[in-house]
Image 1 (cartoon, rainbow, N blue to C red):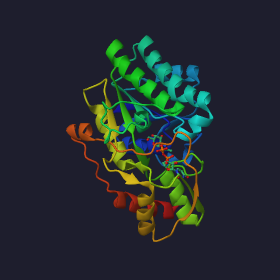
Image 2 (tube, rainbow, N blue to C red; image 1 turned 30 degrees about the vertical axis):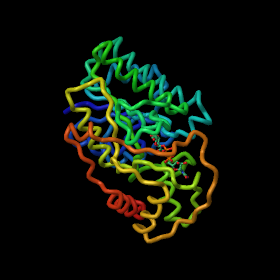
Image 3 (tube, rainbow, N blue to C red; image 1 turned 120 degrees about the vertical axis):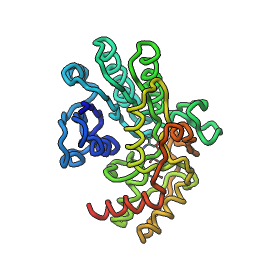
Image 4 (cartoon, helix red, strand yellow; image 1 turned 90 degrees about the vertical axis):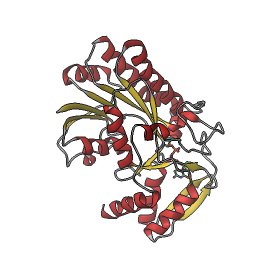
Length: 309
Ligand code: UD2
């Protein structure tokens, strides 16, 4: 049995990962519950610490006493828009806490098998090269993207310079059960789900022509587990579906799936918002990973989960 630390493990992606790992691993979770929820992990047998990853003395103690084989670093303020409003606070979480953990691992020669950092498609910015390959030009346009890119590079450099087994991934737009819809900065499909269910009005920023590569959380979790077990290190993988969908079009599909109509109010685009996003996932495919969830199937599963709440 391996020992696994998931920072941000009570959050959306982290809690789905914890559910997938818990049967065959000893799972420890650190989460300050700023976006995560205790209920996300209350049905599984994990050790949970409600703590901020910026509390470095707590993190150092945990790392030295935990004897972790795998560390999945998912703790983050995961909103682009929020980072534009609170650049310094989000920087401390999205970059400094990551570097502090890497540095503690280095200084203490902790014998981990893999440190996996979760970066973001936001690093690509608005250059018009599509689909985005991992070696495409980057253009981090927001504090969120800057921090994710820097942390990703630190992660990779800690392998190149110090031999620590590290790897990074870039999430595109992940959706599915347990995504918290209750912040204005929540993922768009969690907000759409809530509005559809409660007949609330959805605020559409921009004209809906902006595109995203939406990927179902179960595919993301399977990709994370697969990548963490690879012998290779010091590289970055896109995690996405490889399909480009406009916001308007996914809303229409969701209306069909749910049999309901979304009330929409339009507002100006958000500051720093990206117009197009689509991943090249051939690097993922090369390691034998293929996303299994189509948009319709993923939305159907998400909607039935949502109705059951
Ligand atoms: C998502 C991730 C981010 C990063 C990025 C990578 C979330 C919350 N954010 O940012 O962490 O990985 O992808 O590209 O998952 N929108 C509305 N109305 C709303 C909310 C959003 O119109 O109530 C729009 C928003 O302006 C944007 C699109 O929907 O054009 C997607 O927004 P998002 O916040 O879900 O995700 P994004 O792409 O900014």
